[in-house]
Image (cartoon, rainbow, N blue to C red; front, side, top):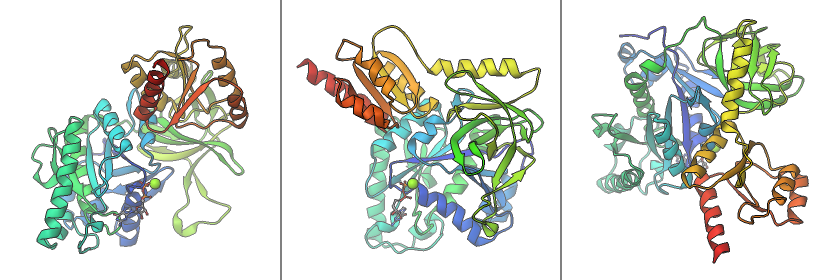
Length: 451
Ligand code: GDP
Ligand code: MG
């Protein structure tokens, strides 16, 4: 076996609680690859980092491994935030093909760790759990960048048993959420057991293992999902809608199928009718070595999946983070526009029935919130993407039932004029960046009101 040219790079998302080490892990994966200066050095994308297969197998000390793998490398999404994953979808599934859930092994599971796992369960996304910060275990002797077992075997018996005990706790936490797990080197069947990889993002210990296990998961579970057609019109997901100096509003997207070219007509989701526009420029980051302050990006004429790229085009102001972006031709543009429109409307709910009003930062996170509220049988009057606005408050003020004179906001802010308005009304506002916290807060409040 060797790299199969019809398979694209799997897309990997890093999830976990704040401060447990997502950014450090990504920096380590990126940084060590750059520092090693190996053949097939990593490529910086917009919103993502690509680590080619050569780089991964060299790091693991056995270049012959390359022939065992069929994927060309791994593409890590760089916008870590546990909610990033919820907001990133492709054709109804998750955009990320694989995930890493990171947990500080000294602190244990936290709300966002648990929420990440629930999301992965719902999407059936293959993942590994990374038990980070093993270097903080008292008495740990760091061995920079070594594979886990090599460094583990050099530790004292007390340190080993200390780590083993911490890992048992992780196994227990995972069991409570419905996953069987073991330290990754003891897992025979990754379909039935989740692998836990002890690492230190700070010292690089265990990083080679993380990369190898991800490749193994891709190999075993994803082959069917990774076929793509380089000649097909591009399909992607909007990571971020961003203002750029001199460019106006731009889209950072992950393209997961086909090709996208400068001059192509694209359709992208917005709260109203989808936007139809023509690509003025496709932009990639300039290599680190040549960065000049005024030229952050370089133009490319076309890119092929899987890739992260910035799109500059007119009329992108209303574009929605998390929505689909697709290349269209005169023959397909009407159908594609209709499809994108209904995909977004499926998530937005607007009924006359009574219920809470909900807001979220992207359509993906809105969808997740809608799902969870439905599970709890909490009715929804209106669901929308965006910060809490004055108009939201005015609408909700008109609702007489006090239990539904409520706005529930996930990962959103309150706009300044809405803040003022809020103070002069009875409207109750719940904000959080963990869905089940939000729902618990609402339920607790309802219970208290009823007492
Ligand atoms: P994020 O919020 O999940 O992105 O977490 P960060 O990557 O920003 O890490 C939070 C803090 O933990 C930072 O001060 C990091 O330097 C530190 N940190 C992350 N990984 C490790 C590790 O493996 N060992 C130690 N000792 N510190 C770490
Ligand atoms: Mg971070």
